[in-house]
Image (cartoon, rainbow, N blue to C red; front, top):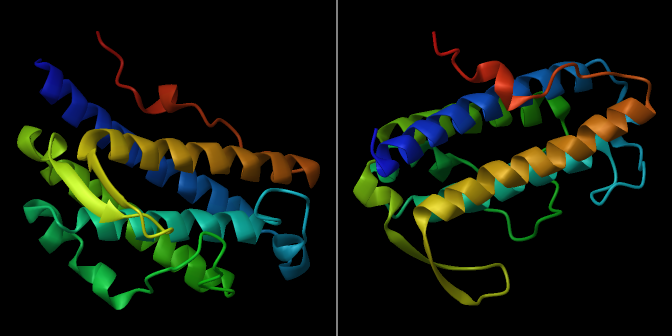
Length: 182
């Protein structure tokens, strides 16, 4: 397997892991009352719902930046129907059911995107403006890695908030999705 094939395989694995973990987190969050979902527990984005909303906002921002890729344009076309957040703490969906529905849609789009990316696109330099309006130029592969790492970081915060409420999300290790080599 070449380096770029391994990179492609890794992003497919991370996309599946992302979906699996988001499903687990949202299933547990669905057992919380509205008060528990939105209670400020001192996390960076306040509550379970605030943190989950932040992850959705960040993914929308990044996925919209990825739309400039030829392959991504078709896969990410449904983003045109969704909000374009202007701030990382912007509450897009105060309704948890709608938030969950959009999360599932974005996770599926990420899987489809990762399946279609080729070596050339992973090395492509994307030009975009950050939220401060500063022009950035960065390769797609590290940006995609950042997106998945960002998800893991904030899901870790959510699992801590769950723990404070006496709830356990269960196994969260990427290891679970790695194929056993016989």
